[in-house]
Image (cartoon, rainbow, N blue to C red; front, side):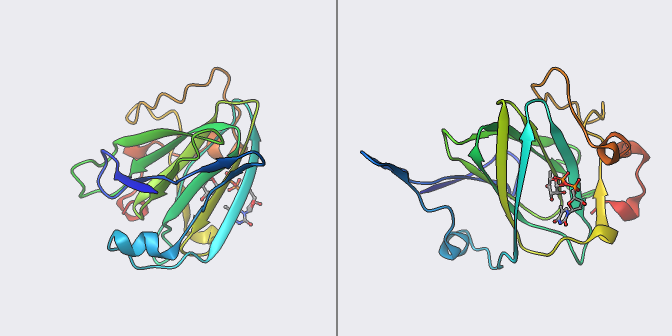
Length: 182
Ligand SMILES: Cc1cn([C@H]2C[C@H](O)[C@@H](COP(=O)(O)OP(=O)(O)O[C@H]3O[C@@H](C)C(=O)[C@@H](O)[C@H]3O)O2)c(=O)[nH]c1=O
């Protein structure tokens, strides 16, 4: 297992060891001690699975403190472009994004710290995304920013995006109130 820092501070790219044999393959998807090797000390309390068709964009979502979430994202079927946007107003990389292709082929995972909005687009016919969170879902503290915000300028690599009604109506980052940022 390799854990690599991403170009945006605090985001980690996890590349698990994959053991292949005549039956198929095996990999460890999470070990608590991985976090400790990075000086991180928290526990995941909720796991989520979403299944989406090609062209779907989910995001960009985050929860405010005290429900802010750290997420470990992996793909169990298909391929996505996973995206994390720095929503920390005082950060030198505020408004910048990191993206990585996660797939059932490469088995890479992204560890998204608190303070980042998260989203993904589906590049394959279907994708199943499985992710761990260190705090529970909290609808009241849920916030989001528009996937097509020109200030973010994200290349989602999809032609005809499919979005939820909620995500189509999210605000642009420049219109957001400071209290809705980190
Ligand atoms: C996220 C979430 C949703 N729900 C419910 C609310 C709603 O009825 C239904 C679908 O919710 P959403 O449309 O918000 O699902 P979705 O758009 O997939 O939301 C997710 O997007 C990705 C990008 C993330 O990073 C996640 O944290 C989460 O925000 O599921 C839960 O019960 N628990 C949860 O943790």
